[in-house]
Length: 284
Ligand SMILES: [Zn+2]
Image 1 (cartoon, protein in one colour):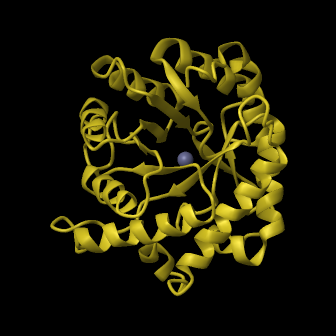
Image 2 (tube, protein in one colour; image 1 turned 60 degrees about the vertical axis):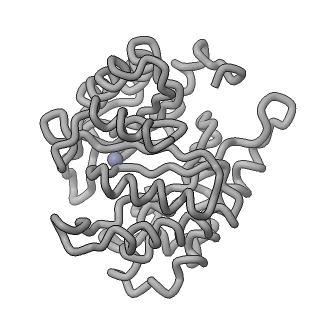
């Protein structure tokens, strides 16, 4: 979405929180208008480790603080204080992009400190909770959870990407992931990104089978992309995604549902309409 607004392919979207704040807000607004109850901050690559690749590691706090403030200000524009307050803002933390030792060279404490630094700025900017997403490694997930916990008591959600024959790139199965994440004290766990809607549904069903009481969330991609005139086009229509949204809720008991890569405001609009009968804010 940001690339359509002019972000050069391959450059860090997070820096737009500082350089193009109005574009980031406009995008948040489009999703709120489409019916999103919850938005993520534009800070997926906001750890020091990831920003260093762009030479932006001296701006970790500013990028994340601005990301939280931009999302918060749009959430407040859409506030419905009588029913459930403002739209909810999750502070988004993605993978560091490096492999933890001993598989790679990144020391556990360095990863933990990077997540703590990012989370502190997101909390300062006013997020309601944290989402650690698209992870593949349970050790990196643990580093993120411990890092966040060292600076904030806000709820933590963690979703892994099961994109490799039903497992994460690290070979983690959904059943194993949910147990470890619940033991680590997360409030919400689930699956995001991945490849197809059916594979992500399967992952969440496997979590549900071993964790009947868990608060689960899912944020599947709008299918897989192909290239058309040098632009990425995702294959799943808003209608197809909305059909799956109902299955995530009725079959897997998912409490929070969203759209990852390729999900336009039109996808969210279709999902919001399909899920309207299932809204239970009191129970959530
Ligand atoms: Zn994705």
